[in-house]
Length: 443
Image (cartoon, rainbow, N blue to C red; front, side):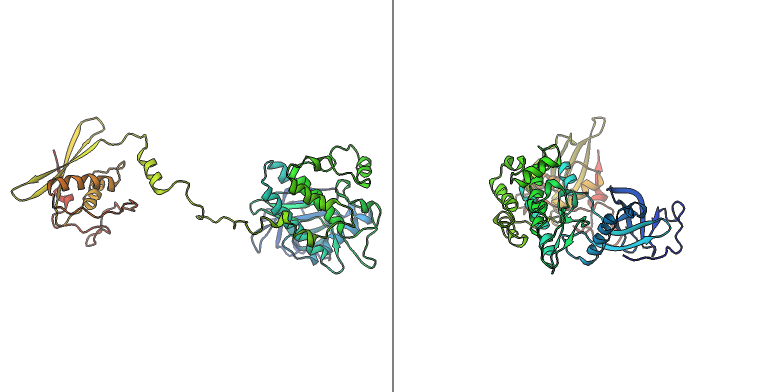
């Protein structure tokens, strides 16, 4: 924590950029949008102008916090500790400062899109067990990191309200380290502090270590699975205290249907002497079972289509829309072996029209002439390959020795129906000297 002067910042109303206020460097701009509010601080949405990234602006009114030395110490501890931590499962800290004129203490942390894990779980009531395991792994990795410090760091208030979510990434991180403590000397802490529903029995005995976080973690997993607050059957903290200290588990624990999940949570809630550290718990089969089978995050274009090409083709061809009634008939002139294709269609008023296209068996192909028909007649509800099939049948009937045109079995074409530039060939064909577009006529 450090003091700075505000420089050129205008304190009356919003500044020129539309922000409610900015930090001393001008890098961070706070909006009026409130992300969350607690007894001690208010969290606003803000932006990091350098990275173009949304951040969380945590603000504490000094007049309120200075009334309680304990609250001030808690605030200082959270900021000091956050600034020293760096892990993917721990909320990221960026900077802090005191605004002397506004009498506020401010610090910037990373922004989470989906609020707390408790809020997220209430919003999405049906979540697969694999998602629960994924969240649990991330939280445990964060605890392994905290407890791996020398001396260890214990959170002391781990609960779903203090775990934050980026829902679009499936990412959860531990936050709100205001009650965290660093174990020193005797390697045990002596303050009774935390949220009763998540507090380990030894916390009430004022002699505990980092294993209290493992107990709280177990209660978090219980809430993730059941969407129930632990000991919701109790009406006051005294009843919770009585159950916890007598070793009675929450009623929600016995409503867990997945026996493997129940066994895992039970390991977290045993007495401290039998409780495994976070590092060992991370290796439990309940969490490790899906680790090797986990699929990579989906990428755009990687998902296979739900219908194969043939089915898609059938689906498209079986469309119920009314199509233009069209027939193609071939005629051979025996005097000069000229072939004309008569295309008969119906106008909008129902009257028939006949259009003739010449077909040169030496230079033309069915697909070439079909594309010419589609363009010249402005046909929109027939594909060129469909018309080419009809042309091929007519030519083969008139000229038996006609070699069937070579068209792939799967018809996937990207046709360019625009006029060709003068002097350039169409990308799919070369016209003969007697272009069908010039010789066509109608009756």
